[in-house]
Image (tube, rainbow, N blue to C red; front, side, top):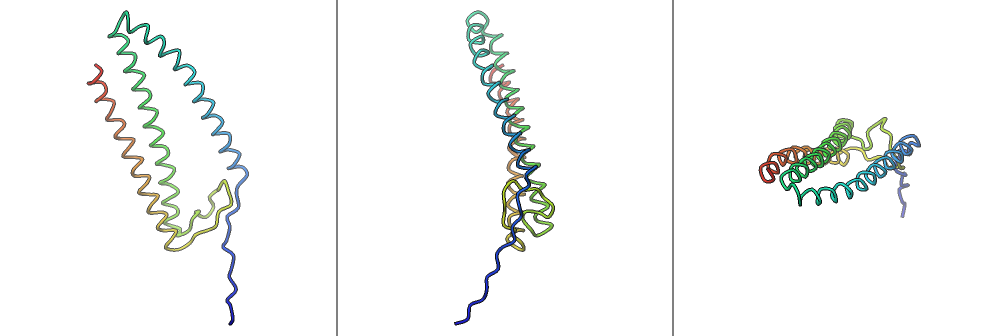
Length: 149
């Protein structure tokens, strides 16, 4: 029996600069999150004390805090959706994943043809879900304002 030689899939090598940038971003986000959570505990204690003396003022401050939190969440959803949409459109157009010229953070096998286009379409759908989620979160501003105000 004669066997066909199998070719190894093409590998897109990891970009050390992209890997370093991602590590820096993760450190900044984690440090920022820890800072916010540390400050939030003191803010909530103060808000509880204020609620005893001035319930309406405390409710207004809580409403403002909630609006800032929802705005941040909405922005994160929209930004992630934009990044995913960009990569997905490039993948669909080129018929290759990862798209040619893109920096990857780990070695990835290159997928080409219909499988890559499918990944592109699924990515566009995922980005759409993130954009719709961001818009929905924005509509929650008004609903929480009516509920709390």
